[in-house]
Each structure stands twice: as structure tokens, then as C-alpha cells.
Length: 358
Image (cartoon, rainbow, N blue to C red; front, side, top):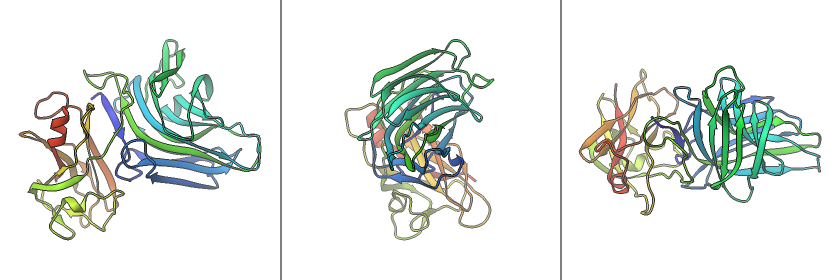
């Protein structure tokens, strides 16, 4: 596939994509939340750490990149949090988007205390340009190719190119990207003072590679919005925690855990829902069906995202449920009923939900 990952944190669930991690020296305290301050949709991921200027700490969300490509296109909406107290002479630099291979930063984007953007290879600052504000969201796009001599990193902020680096973009011994880290990671420590707050709100993340015929280039400044369930359909195999409307038990944001839920017991059980529409005037790059799940009793089960477009019912790859809540999602880049790019009418008329596959 060309669209490798996408996320708007519209579930209000912080682990909606990838896994959440913390490392370096533990900060004095941290906040890792999902906030209603959003660029598009209703929610965004909020990451922040609180520590001294000389504390090398971070809070990140890490997303695996399939098939280890050497070139990717990333988009991220970011609103910066940057505060400082006690009048310290602070020159901290903090990464917010790292393209990694294993534990090595191949290429990373960072901001200094003034919001100026810097490009790093490993821990070496190789270029810079542009500004990330604290007053509103910026749309950051990056075209990154890792190579020892002829690599590049092209960065746009709100559609304007601010960095165009060519040369050595290979820090590890392998010309590939294995995962992307989003959040707050200290690169350069400060020189004194007391409390420092760094982090930001992150929204509308998407990642493409160069394969295929669609979603294989620059992503653009669009966003990700939620289409929440509004009506049950004839496919209503799952039981429910209360009432008679399945859709009303799975439309929560943030997720409400065991307060309201549907429950499936038989392999093949399918639950599909109609949903709200996307407003006219835009184009759709991809559709993602996402859900939270856990096993309530017995051994693990497998839950898969599902959708119906036209006469075609598509069942995605299964996700193993455990006794704690996890998250599953699958991207459909084309309409499974036509094998063509999504038309807005087809998106607004599809049904989406989940299937129990074992």
C-alpha cells in the first residue's frame, strides 16, 4: 500500500496508532493526553514533559513503518507548547518528528525555544528554516529520502517550502526507515534555570511511500475527520451492554471502556453501522475503519474492521484482543466495490463496523 499510516486521534484514545513510550531520563512529571484542541475533527494528541533545562527526557508516540522504505512522505499538524520560568538562559532544542531506523534517528525535525525549525541527521543539525507557532496549528510536510550522498529532506510549513536539503541523510548503516516518532524529544539541553515545559498538540498525521498509483507522493494540507456511527443496519449480530441500539454503544469519544459496548461470541458475527457524512467540497484519499476492543472472558479472540460499499462487504485483517483495551484499524485506499479511488458519495453511503473472525 502507499498510505502507510494515518491518524487524527478522533477516538480520544491516545494509543489510536502505534504505541506510547517514554525514555531518556525520567522527567519531573509528564502529561500524555488526548485533548479537544484540534486542527481538524474533535481531538488531537497532547504530549508534554516538565523538567529542568538539563534534563534529557521525552514523550513520544511511535508508529511502525511497513516494509522499511528508504523514502517517505509525512504530514503532521502541530501546535507548539513552549514555556519557561525563572528567567533561565534556555537554548533547548526538541524533536517533534523523527524518522528512525531502529534506535537511530535518520532524519528529524525539531524546534528551538523560539519555534525555529531545525533539520537533524542523528544529533547533527544539517539545515533549518521556518517557524512553528504556539498560537495555532501549522501543517508540516516532509519528503525524506535517506542516502549517504544523494539523499534529501524537503520540508513545507502550511504549503510553503522552508527547507530543501540535499546530501548525506543516512545516519545508520541501513538506508531505510523503520518507524516514526511523534512528540517531544530533547536533542540539545538548556544552560540553566528551573522549570521547562515542552511539547505540543499533534493532529492529522499521515504517511505515504512511493509505491502504487495513489497516495504515493506529497500528502497535502488536508486533515482527518471522524464519521461516527449514527444508525444500525441489518447486520446486527453482536449483542449489547444495554438497550436495543448497537450504534449508540460504540459512538463514544473518548472511549468509555466497559460503560457501553457491544459483544460478539460467534465467529462470523458482523456489526455494521451508518454514520455521519463528510461535507461536500473535498476529495478523499483513504478511508480507515478503527475500533477499540478487549476480551471479556476466556481465551483471546480476533476482531477485524469491516465495511460495505455498494454490493461489496470487505473484511480487514484481524486484531487479537486481550483482557485490556487495545486498538485496531485498517486503511482502504480504494473503494472495494469498484477498485477505484473513493468518491465522496460512496464514502458517505458506506457502512462500517467490526467482524469477529475467530
